[in-house]
Amino acid sequence: MKLAIVDLCCGNIGSVAIAFGRFGLTPVVTGDPEEIASADRVVLPGVGAAGFAVERIEALGLRAPLAALDQPVLGICLGMQLLFEHSEEEDIECLGVLPGRVRRLQPAPDRPVPHMGWSKLALRTARSTGLVEDDYVYFAHSYACDDGPWTLATADYGRPIPAVVRHRNYLGAQFHPERSGEAGARFLRNFLDAPC
Image (cartoon, rainbow, N blue to C red):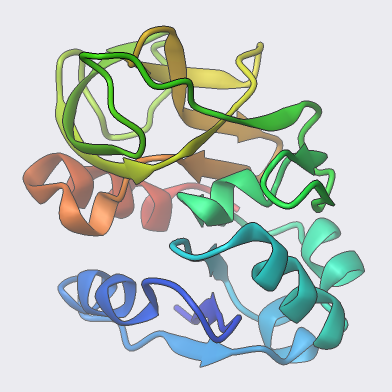
């Protein structure tokens, strides 16, 4: 299997590559549209600023190719947010694969921003993700996507935070599966095993 990790010169590329390496894969880290299109699976990694990530997408000519992929695609953290239409972070237009916006989390005395640490998942559907009700997974983010029919699982952070979304062949995780222990490993394994 050819697994491509999109190289936007930022993010958690190393830890994502190591996580997939535990399944015997050696991911190709690339910003080349043709190499990405030829992969069996594509990962859009996270961590970083949305504005810089979109600048890199534009510079590499990836906006249209990423939005047109038909193989399974996984966006992680910022990578998931980039799948939506718009982000309040730097007021930017994202890829538009999913409807809705990415909005800054609102701090409260018991909910600092960024949201960092382990949170429990609530599943909204039996649709297979490899996750189970009450799994704990690791988050590190200051922005969150709009909730909607695409949400498969949430975490409670003052409001339901979409933790897993799916639209067609695009899957997104606001949490970091590569840092979420056994639950994260199940989620990544399920992504690899998903039918094309």
